[in-house]
Image (cartoon, rainbow, N blue to C red):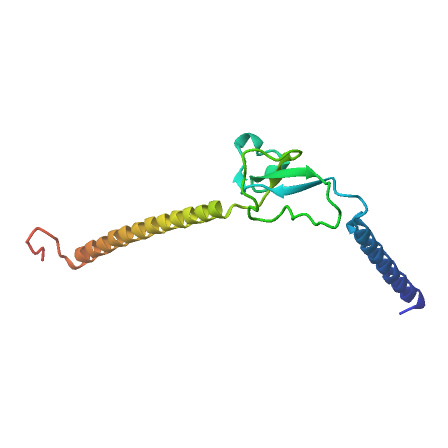
Length: 170
């Protein structure tokens, strides 16, 4: 190897390392969050996840699974030392009341899959598969009987037996 090819390979390696470090720096700075901004509202889950109605499926709170949960958001009047309950908690945390308390704003949150609905969909899937399996087994049994009868007729014709005539054609 010549000296120029070694320096070329070395410079290529250095450029690759530099670009990799630059990408890592960009990722780290993009993930940094500004913690100095106070939270404007505290939202708490209110009730269970429910399917979105047809006219609201295009809304962002109905994405990606088509389910939503009612949230009650109130202005942040508490000290920053109190940590609000996370809004992603999958189970209802309060019993729904008739009206929100003073100063709360109702809002919707996107939520994941509804276990009862997923369970029902799974059992429907299993039932359909069992129906298809039963139909396939029935078709296979009927087909095997037809093939067996055809083979028996061919064998009878080959050895000279004719069913039902009582006369031996020999």
